[in-house]
Amino acid sequence: MKKALIVVTNVSKYENINRPTGLWLGEVVHFVDELYKKGFEIDYVSPNGGYAPIDPSSLAKEVMTDLDWIYYQNQEFLDKLGFTLSPTEIVPEDYEIIYYAGGHGVMWDFKSDKNLQKIASDIYMNNGIISAVCHGVVGLLDIKSDKDNYLIKNKKVTGFSNSEEYELGLSDFVPYLTEDSLKERNAIYSQEKNWHEFSVQDDRVVTGQNPQSGKAVAKKVLSILNTN
Image 1 (cartoon, rainbow, N blue to C red):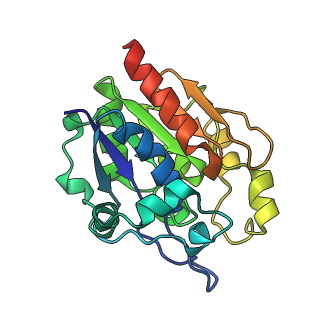
Image 2 (cartoon, rainbow, N blue to C red):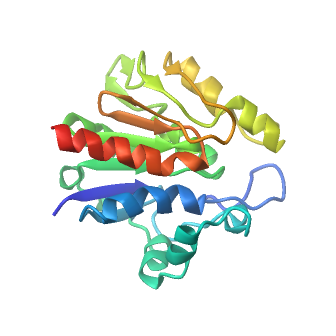
């Protein structure tokens, strides 16, 4: 059975303001739907295991697509988000793909999680694919390709742009900016216009810019598998 591992956040609130956050629903839905259609088995993991909160803003009627509504009413899917696996339960060799979904919550729990970094590194070293979208790309920041170099050093990547963060008015309420952090790791960052679908592939690393880009990331991931 082909298997993929989806990483989601446990964080439900901004650290410094009374504002809810969590997983951006569509960033999971539009990625996994492409994989489900290709017969993949999908597991969901979070830094602490257990409940993965959904950002209420991702459920707004002007944001939700017909596909989002289908998954939002799927009890099996929602149960998987309610009872995610913990990193200690994961056997990296079982997976061809790891995908970090975004939502602002990830800014507080993805970057420093060494267990997830080890899982991603092991999947990659086993000829698997590391992928991420939007804020989820911060999960890639501290993954090492060896003891001296970060995986994304000199790799072409994208992720949630500074201009999109400024447009939302949230740049002062996150601990760091995604675009700046990628550049600090000497990644080769590029972007499209705000809120336009955009994804980048470099070898077996695939990243997407914003919530509109989950499907584009999945298409590139599947293309890699088809050519291997």
